[in-house]
Length: 303
Image (tube, rainbow, N blue to C red):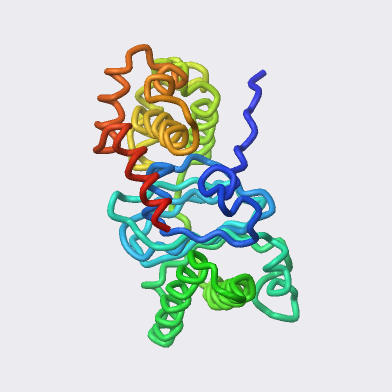
């Protein structure tokens, strides 16, 4: 009997920006989050938080439960706390990511507001290019609200919490109005989606072991070639790249939030040779581990 790993719960405040660990609202540019987590985000959820991705440019592949979407921005997708999701963005994709504690949005989700069918709102994926001309004004308004939100989130001005709460609710009102026009999911074999999620679960369990891809395929019960084909169809990336992305995510996290040396991080990630880890990091990030740590620390200090 195969034991399924639990779907990881990611708390943005705990793993990305410790300054806002207990905040009701977390905002970040999509590009900056992708630089940290990688362009591939395996299946995960956000317990007690709604998360909104507003992708202004670039292409994104999104799995919401067992539904697959592939679309060019501008678009948005909304994931309620209970909905597992995964996505892959292109290197040039950018936009906004808003993570909000569920209690803040419950007043918008009552039947009286007419915006959703109760608190258990479904996942939503909307391509803004598919909206009618009358929606263009709301999209322009939405862009302005996100710029205000970005400024309020970063600066500690008087009334910050009140301003954030008001802006968040306005943004969600506009997007929930669009949600009735959710896009059609792309057809995908259910087995393929199940195997893809299982592969990502196994990556989470074993990525530090540097196992060959054939061992993952054997554990799933398919051939390595089929696993690679599934990953390319769903994520647009080969299976090897998905495994490397998870290693890079953990390497970035340790470089930013631990006091370990680069060599210590190398060994903790299962690499046997610091020189190889150095080349691996440069190949995937474009900079050395030391330069990445220094530049990101300088960015945080400047904020």
